Image (cartoon, rainbow, N blue to C red; front, side, top):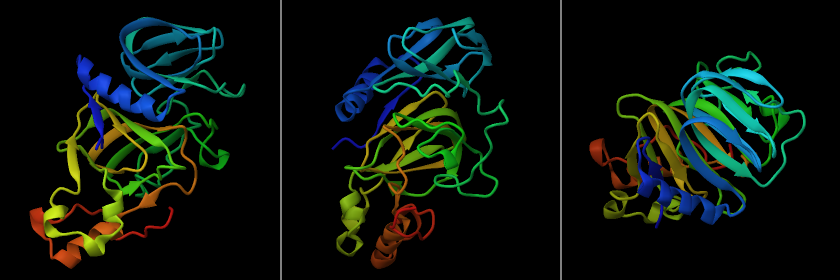
Length: 280
């Protein structure tokens, strides 16, 4: 069963084809693509543009701004983005209109409106975690229900999943990665939720490790466990949006499997810390 898909930064058409096919299968009213060395984008739909390389100045009908890695632009239908230097970008076309109050350029490292808000996948008090587009106004300055994103550095995030029915898919747009940076994932959440019946042989293949590097795009379908470790700086992109109450922690179940089977050292399932399986 499909568990995670990875697109490498330097031409990987087959990797992107697999990732794209899985994404649109779950989100048929959305579009996803990437561009390299662009200087102009013409929007015919609501576009969220994630700058993924390059730096310079860009303008649209509504605003002019500097841009660099980590910035985001929102284009309404009929608008054009022009830049004075080539840039790489990952783009999402949304089936919803942007609220009028949303700005064109979102700059998490340059606009003081974005402050670190530890929680979720980076809960340490000193965590870098900046919400750009959120589901509720108390969680960030800009509300959008078609797509949410926060830019976050994940050193040892929680093992969790988002329910298949009411949850969302996530994509990690990796913009920096430390030594050993990885995404841990599993498509067998039902088995993790039944730790009393997991066998030692089954435990060996329950969780997979996907090493990641700067420039990668990782797709994680709803209903699948995931966790980032070892310094993954990424835009965590939620489609169709992160609905409160739909992040379910799994570390307590993984710990229970380890304890019941006596798994230690390299045999042990990776665990952040004992956590409740109730909604965070």
